[in-house]
Length: 157
Image (cartoon, rainbow, N blue to C red; front, side):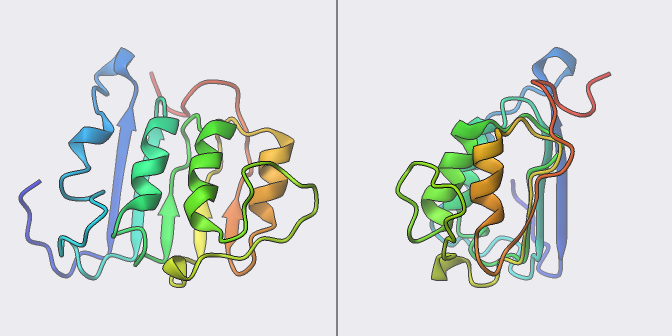
């Protein structure tokens, strides 16, 4: 990705499924967009949307560990098929006091690395009630988990 778009505020990519040409992998994004080290790409980005992705779990860790994720206001991983495994990958970096297992009703503290993050959009994904309860109990973060699905992305045909 060799772009210079310093004023870009919103980046939304609909990644799709292998069955219909969505042949992406997290390796396509980690050298630049999802690099753990600051690369300076899109310095004013406020919204990062990696939506409608098949096998979304495989991109959750790279997304939440990226330098870009630590400076945007909104991360949108909606319309995919994130499972509890992907939610676990997000929670491990997103909150400071997550033990790795669900504790019903426990309130979680958002990591200082994500002080700018206001919204985590995970609507239309494949999350259990326990994962939803955990995500909804992160202080100072709006998490959208409406419209849970089965195993399929929202748009594939």
